Image (cartoon, rainbow, N blue to C red; front, side, top):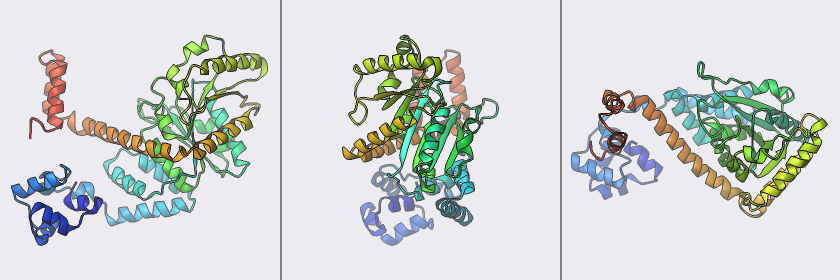
Length: 400
């Protein structure tokens, strides 16, 4: 981080910082604009005063091409934001595409866009997970159509597994939500997970914020499936639904216990035709089992409902429970705290993602790392020692 950005971020005046490091305000201004480079002892003081956020590299390495956006870039972001708030769907698609992009220049532009978005605590974020074939898309379409008829604007982020060849989505949820896909008050965005675990794409949380800025007040996040890793969506939504199929008693053993413990609402779908009785049996089994689990995030026992999405039965009851859950969350003053906690969790998730991308693009390609990996493969260096060497290098404990 350059010194100018640090002072701006932490609202520190040039005069006060100059006093802290023992130089004149004029000298500090020259350091900031690049007219002079601080001597070693001043660089050390700056490093200490900024807790290491500003170091020698920030004075000796020209980062302008990487860190600065051109005026045309800034104007383009302002145009996207203006049109996003005006309800332009092409600009909404452009915003989410920018947020999902892996290009370095796009990341800078996306960061600027995201920094201008307003926090929106008036929306309702609904996560939906379940095994393949349970009817996630069908239920979302039934619920979405019901909500739109009541005057709501509904968006769907449908996370699909990525093709290893193309990197794009293998599935197409728009083809499974035919009514919503053509409704002017609905928006469906299939996104490839790009190999990211947790049932969501790498930038799902940021995409939610773009949808809220556009004006959607109800946002569904449909995960790829259900499993031990399909839990990241829980930390992005206000209520987490787990869908089940009507089945025998062994179903309780087959589904991942961790997912059930996270559920705010459990729905047994496909309760129609010859499966009605089986669906009720499954509901009863889970009702009994839920007595042994902890309460939901707002201290309520997760409810268990049955529905038939294809016959549109039970949809209203699902929404009534969601509304009751959100109201209870707000009445107990937990809704806003949960949202705040989620922002922090997604902060660290984004940090982890940036570190991982840096490692893959800039670190693993270095020759000395390749040589180290080669030695590990030949058992000339142990995994433990190799890990220690890499860690010490990254934390500058050994190679300063």
